[in-house]
Image (tube, rainbow over all chains, first blue to last red):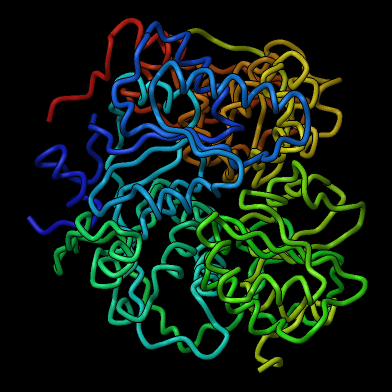
Length: 416
Length: 169
């Protein structure tokens, strides 16, 4: 029977699966981060298990609150270190980077099944991994058993044609798509991205797109594993992890959306839901007090590069704070080597250590009452950046950089 | 399962986990009795002072969207809420709520107002609105998830079965 990418990946672990089946499957990677990890540890201890099933495939990431902003979170970090030491699993520390970026750089392989106690675990779908977010109890039991259960989702095909015009990126495509199908438009479904434009889509853009699949409610956001995947894995020194992986051409999709990339404009998602997305022209002139470039959505080298190209030789607006946060130690090192970090600092930016930084409102850029932020992150929910009286707009790094210069939301095509 | 009786506390559409328990309280996640004081703060500001044991939390579309933080259903349950009634629910929140042993019941909540007295019969699959004298039917909970719910959550389920009992194909 012809299979979707979802069915193909799950079939290799539980032969004969079809959409709608409930299956228990072995896991290739199980991870958590520092704000959901302490509950993972407590639930694991409560479960009666004493050893984790796959220490070599289990990772704790310290990324959400690093370096820790207060003693309570510092104590949570101590708990995680103690557990990791006893369990013999891996830990990524302060400054290593955001979990999803490190999973892409170091761990995820085409065909893997990955769970993490973070909703943006879907990011690894860009590499053809069936990767999805779960809560702490599911992840604790995943660590204990080396398995989890899934309902095999039906798939929507996003058929991409044509090519992006200047200053339009994967971030704009995913904001456009979520605007079109809604923040619950793909709830419980798999989003599968393919089509003739696939080969033009860089891994950086694929990661941004998969990252936000959850903002349409999807369980996974999958890309086939192709030459772009092979090249990316080789660049990470993991060429042997590559294998090609595609859906069958006549697979059964619940819905098919066709998007010509040439018609996608730079997009802005207005407060307070992600599907409130419009072309940048609709947001033109909105004053912003903070610009945040970074996160698991848009903190990769390609994102940093486009922002630096716009900011080179310019200054951020005197009434706008510009925060830049590379997504990993590797991205930071590469950005230093290429001179981008100097460009940001000369432009008046604050460069933050690799991590989640201002995205979830814990520290490093909490908004004041009535303030607006243009962020390259994935969520603009009320209260997300630490203040329910603030406003968050989402856009690409190009739009963010252009807007930082003018102090108001700006079409990056005006800076060309 | 039994009949639940209580009062509706109504929230709107798209109540995210950031509304339910904002990230700015992440430092209290290892201190649940303190964390629960801030439950629902950004969606129903007077929730903490109004909620009573046995109340129902009533949502609209896409309840619980956003982060995977299981603290969201935990603080709702700790507040005394006996079940969440909503038109639709985001997948991670749904799974987390079941894992915590708190039912998420899918039904048309348009006709339920804040403070309405409700009676939920889980076996019959109905919500009787005692204030407005009408009845709404509930979507069936899938059997696999019902089994987890009946054990009181995923930890007691795993303690009992030592693994996942998935339906044979």
